[in-house]
Image 1 (cartoon, rainbow, N blue to C red):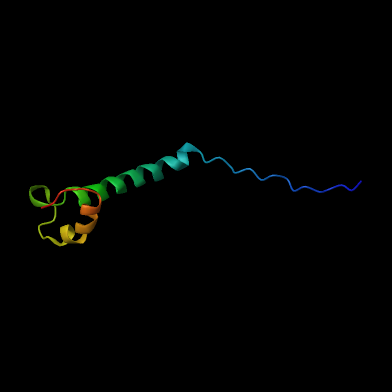
Image 2 (image 1 turned 30 degrees about the vertical axis):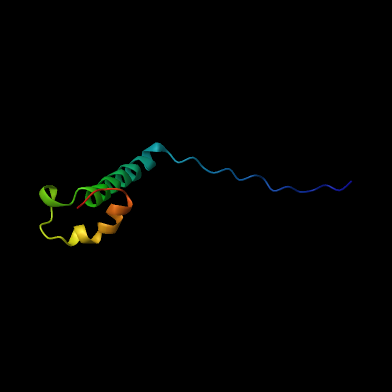
Length: 69
């Protein structure tokens, strides 16, 4: 009989929560900021006076179902 040499299976190393948590918080804040600019950056809730941000995200706003006019 011939012996078949098998490679040892490489298991992924677990990522500690302590290293993952800052990235998860950062991603969550970026997501909330994006949702604000797409969904609420218009009219009375606008942080930026001009319409540049509104016009930049206008099509994405309609694609996601946010009303704007």
